[in-house]
Amino acid sequence: MATAFPFSAIVGQDEMKLALLIAAVDPKVGGVLAFGDRGSGKSTAVRALAALLPKMKVVAGCRYNCDPDKPAEFCDDCRSRAAKGAVKSAQVAVPVVDLPLGATEDRVVGALDLERALARGEKAFEPGLLARAHRGFLYIDEANLLEDHLVDLLLDVAASGENVVEREGLSIRHPARFVLVGTGNPEEGELRPQLLDRFGLSVEVKTPDDLPSRIEVVRRRDQFESDSAAFVAKWTREETKLRKKITSARQRLPAVTVSNAALEHAAKLCMTLGTDGLRGELTLMRAARALAALEGENAVTDSHLCIVAAPALRHRLRRNPLDDAGSSVRIDRAIAEVFG
Image (cartoon, rainbow, N blue to C red):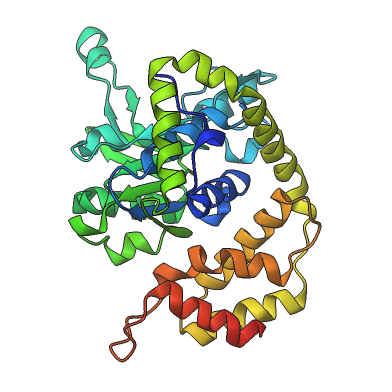
């Protein structure tokens, strides 16, 4: 595999980097959608995160990356192994699976293993991309161009947390819980509302408009392309620090408290903005808690809520024909009203 650009070396794009770190700390936040200019580092940041994440523990030999510490969520194969004796574990890299725009349904959900069927006459299941992405990240570049039938598949799996395959005499059900990460350019079309709502955080990515930042981006990219090994080695210490920060935040997360006052402020903010449903409040609370864990805090504060409000809520706002202000401006006004 090609060497990934170090996450710590990415210049600017603070909102996108923070959203990705929050999703890495707490996958329940619901994924990240990064929309913005071409060539602004969206794909680079996602692939850099993959190389940054600490390894995870899986059942050795499992095709679905089952967690050995959660037997209730085992696939059928792991349940059979557990019934016969102790389940062995192994450390593997967190999967970051690319979902190509032209992928077939069989490639995504899995299908009959034709090689075994033809050679031995056996009906066996060949796992697809959803199986590989379990407990990891499913990355969709140009998510707004994804075909409708694949969008429908993703919506079903994202809602249930498992993939069900009923075809060619096969009946397979396996866990498929992943963090959905999408990128795209708004000039090429909007995302379907049903899929948009499934992303926990939405960030706006813009080309740097100050001269020093643009120069530094070009300089670092040129150094990386000239000698990637030396560039990665230069940033190893920063990457290690950030990796430890993610690990510590994951351990601290269950102990981070959300007071009634913080919940009230989150609900007031969503009511002021007129968001539909309660997914806005839930995402706001989860993102703020993950941010507090990243910062080493034991409780969610108003500051945490204000920081994550825009990425958690900007894609959940109703269109207001009488207000031509952008979503970020409307959120800033609501924050000023609720928090003073």
